[in-house]
Length: 555
Image (cartoon, rainbow, N blue to C red; front, side, top):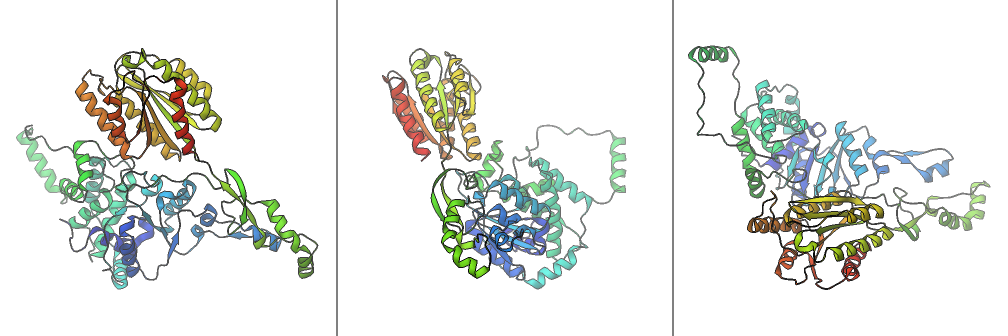
């Protein structure tokens, strides 16, 4: 049983208003932002909310040397950061998926110190990367529905006075820990959060002792966004072994001597399942689990870099020196004409530089591309076009080396697909991997797609832009288990191709068959990739469109 007076978003707003710094905060979808923030402010009107953009500089969070004031005063002047304030702080972080990793680490540290409450707003697109894991682990709530402003400051004040005395039975703690393990939630932080949420829920309901509704509701709020699997159903055919009569009597006496203990793990699990979206529940039931960080909100990959790397294209007036490259010469040129006036004004012979004189460099940052080659070395290709494929790959590798792009190489043949070369800039390593690539055997195309998909996700998490280049005839005939079953192999290949397409990864399928048919084209369609039939092209002809695509990515 759970309390149905309010939805989970409304309960989360009340809980954060009650003890937000102790709980950490919430991950909120864009659609739910307005209603949730309004509900939170209605419950905690005295708690100011500071809006922080995803582009916030690490100096603004942790504080830094104020260069302008330091030059004006002649001594070091430090500006305080948002996270160094003594009073409680609520941060409203929009587009949390774009937060720089260093800023995410600083905010995570503040959450560990329980000095801030974080409301992280993010998008809900399924084809993007998740928010920084270190933040998600510290936010107990995931809000995707509208909240209602039902909590008043008086209700929160009364619950706060009651919270310190709320008790929870050890048996309920054991139940919450057991359910976390049943749902394959590895982080111990989740069970701790669930216990604290259960106590706070009891306080909001005006109870001094945590009850079943509180525990079940806490599990729904905290565990549902993190669940990685569902416990297997009990085997009804298996007969339960009955203990001997004397053992049953001793067990009954032992149970009677113990205080009443709740055994509601199955009820709690059912409550968690009821709050899961249908597609997530289907994945858990099938045993596939969740991909990525386990949240039902995925967002754009975080932007790497600090704004100071790249090619200088000019200069501009500095609105802030945080994460910017100071153009010293341009700053001095701007200040120079004013020196006679400033000498008279300030009575000093020193060069006087004011805040308005600062100029920062305009930087054009270059996207780092990673070309992931998947070369079909099976028997259907090895004796026909493998030599041209190797030559094309080597040609593309040489141009990638000039542009300082990374390359990776996957070879698939016989029963497996192997990563011969992880993402690297070393041309010599790439050439050695190509030279040692054997040929012959079946075509495990599904395994190859799985390997390149994993590499592409790794590149995206690192802030790079992956491009997959498949050189194959598309004739899958080996399953993931290494069996020679063409029908099953084709089904697995199409499933992997559609999964890759759902991630929105740029891809290209080059049909190296001497007589192109529908196999490679069908593969390209499933991957949403460009299809290039090259039945009689040489190595340089194959390499030309690949180089053009990679150059376009780095512009």
